Image (cartoon, rainbow, N blue to C red):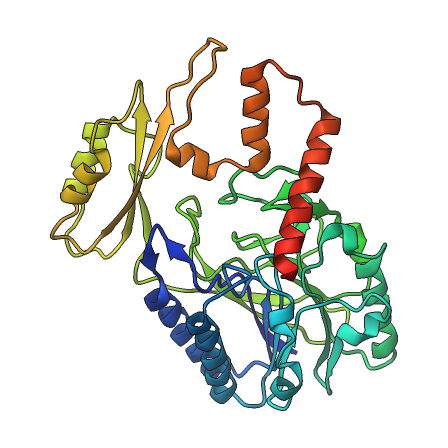
Length: 389
């Protein structure tokens, strides 16, 4: 079985007011060429198709056209699309039946009563258990394990490769690029252990974490393909898709990583660390005029940014092809415990619980583990309600 593993397209993202359609078009063109050249049996898109649960009609139409172009690139290829935590589950189910006539399977929900409902066979090639994101508290106990067991029962004596798609956070993964994440929660999703998937799969095609990687402890069978286009300036790594081949059930998968080129890369000045405001502005003035990049300035503050700082940076980028986005203001660390104000950039990057903790600290309150747990539950409940609307 040969398949292309991708995820986290985040269509419709506005990067500091800039539309990214050109970049997503470039990404699609490259993936289409990869499909034409390799003729995979399947294309797996493991969640976060959209950047928002309420994408515009134009963005939805873009994705519909993309699916048709991918189908036409190699009509024998099955396409699997699962919802991620950024997606509307309902939206992925609306045209489920007509899409299937074109070998395209859009899956928004798990089936809590019948794990086999999310299992789809590729006759003579392999079996795919396509599992979309499910809010952690709504996920039945041992669900992933039960699906893998059901898949192996279907496989029985066929000896076909078993592939599981999932959009989740697996404990032990590298979460570089995901702000305010930890070993227990990455990108707003509570981590699960590899043991949750049981045994018997040949490859787990993960989505959610944007850095491509093999998951530690997965025996070279559990992989995040990563996002094909950078979503934030902190994703300082290459972006790609993964071409996977598995000879038969039980064999190790072989993976070819194929990088996706972005016509508008995300660039931080300086690339590492910070500079004073004047030094950062000079780096922007010296930036090549013909480089069509997005620009973030990393500035260290001792007091406050100068008046009209953003206007000064925008003027420094005039006449260049680059697009100035923001000033990432980082305050010098101080030893006193007095309350500190937050810059707009710091506030935008902070998670709700970080803001709550900061408020508690500044107010002299104790924000203990119990309160943190209750706060996280409230935030997750609100996010779940938003996804289902």
